[in-house]
Each structure stands twice: as C-alpha cells, then as structure tokens.
Amino acid sequence: MRDYFKYGEIRSYFVDFIADNSEALNDSDFRDELHYHAFNTDYYIIGTYRAKQWLKDKAFDVIGIIKDYEESNFGEVTTDLSSPESVVNMYAYIVGEEIVSEWLELNPLQEEVEE
Image (cartoon, rainbow, N blue to C red; front, side, top):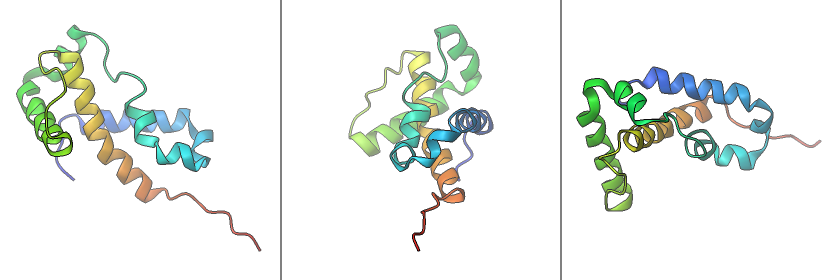
C-alpha cells in the first residue's frame, strides 16, 4: 500500500458509505461496481475553497499522482488540474480504488451453497 495523503480520511468516508449501503452489499452487481458507487456517483469535496483547504500544501503531490494515474490508465491527463475541486475528487477516486480493493479482499461475497 502506498502512503497516500489523507488515506485515513478517505477510508473513513468509504466506511461510512459501506454502513449506509449495507443492504446493497449482498447484491453482486452492486459489489462489482462498488468503487463506482462509492467514489464516482457523488463528489467527495464540493467547492473550490473547501478543496483548497483540504489540499493544503500537498496540491502538487496530489497533481503528480493524478497525472501518473491518468497517463498510465488513459494515455492522457483528462482532469482539469486548474480546478482544486476536480483535483481533490479525482485523487479521492484514485485512493478509493485501493481502499475498495482492500475491503473486497477482506469481505468476500458469501456464495449461497445449495444442498
């Protein structure tokens, strides 16, 4: 696991998401798209001011992570790096991939066994 900036905070956000959606976790389709539902259907941070406060002095580190991720996965950078809100939300999306992956490893879907 990489030592991500504000990993614990983003993980707490995910834990709250899991608690709020516990019923849906039994649905394999929901679980297959868990990262999408947790980190792509709503904004992690809303507002430029809040995003700037959240980033503090780590903006350039976070932008570097986004650039590496997008170039590696998409061949180009598509996030508006001049928008603090876009930067924070894409960063949460990236860190969220690891958080969801770890959670799924620790919480496998229990298959119903027919006798």
